Picture 1 (cartoon, rainbow, N blue to C red):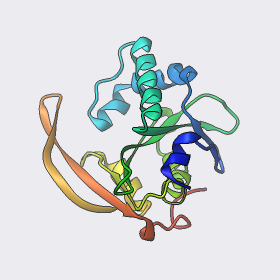
Picture 2 (cartoon, helix red, strand yellow; picture 1 turned 180 degrees about the vertical axis):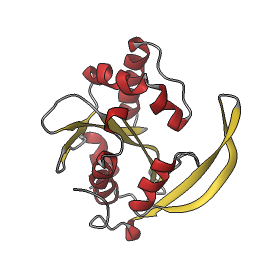
Picture 3 (cartoon, rainbow, N blue to C red; picture 1 turned 90 degrees about the horizontal axis):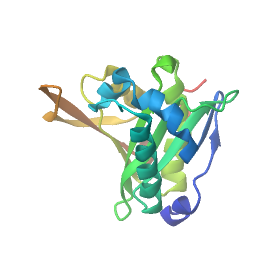
Picture 4 (cartoon, rainbow, N blue to C red; picture 1 turned 30 degrees about the vertical axis):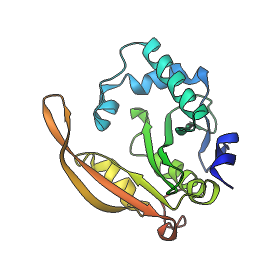
Length: 193
């Protein structure tokens, strides 16, 4: 498969506990629960959404980004529920270099249950095998221990730290840069129930 095919139709994935499906306009309400939670958004140095309209606009922008071939988003739900509890995406897609950055977030009520690990395995597999990527990057903040541990458990290698890279709430934050190459990814090693 190629990036052209990936942008023609975003696939849905099923794991032991989750369904990962393309983003839809109607997801805004559930996403507001995530984007409106300062405990979630401070993990990636963003202020929480103040209104549902702000989240609706954010969803519209992400859907436009897909149409413009800038990003691909998946929402994840528990199998027995239809409500979105998290999301993951590829963005900063460099078609020529076959590289993209992965991003993810999760409703705080579901933290520390292995949900993100489970969700990212098929997304990483699809990035390499479905989209033809050779390299996937991730850029969490140094103090986000959970995100750093998640990436390391999935096989990402810490390639460097951009010291005091981002100004947020009155202080500078260090940002880690991780990379995972297609030949390094071992999906059976990745955490998943």
